[in-house]
Image (cartoon, rainbow, N blue to C red; front, side, top):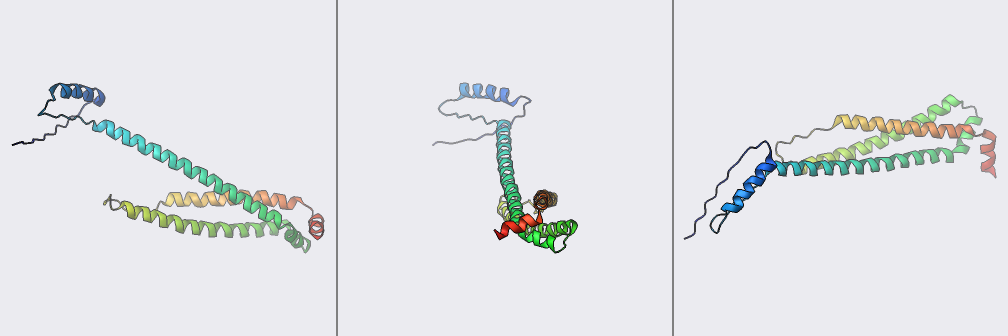
Length: 189
């Protein structure tokens, strides 16, 4: 009758790589038909897992950064072109007496409305995805508690306002550079 006996030996070593090599040499010498010795280096495995996690974090960060840059370019381009295409409308408003200050206020309010709408839609979608990820991972990690990353939410709101502010300032400068008469005449032709 064949019998099996299992034994585990856990060792702590200052230099895990050297200890693992020495134990593997001993295991190779002692191993036979009826003895099987496996050596597992949990410190090296932990280092590999940390390196893998760091690589994944780096790729996610770079992907997010590229996506954010594309989104910023899209918002900047859309706002700038929208304001430039409305040159005739702006010329009419200026010709009936709207001053530069009122014109700037109008554009800032309009773009702030876009910013708030976009941020709210993005926040609801991001919060939903965050909760779905939490819910999915809560099966594996039962001690995990759901927390909304409010610092990131505040940073996203600040970045949204900054990007819109820069876009509006650029488009406003382009829209105010032209002549009212030239803008009205260009549309009439």
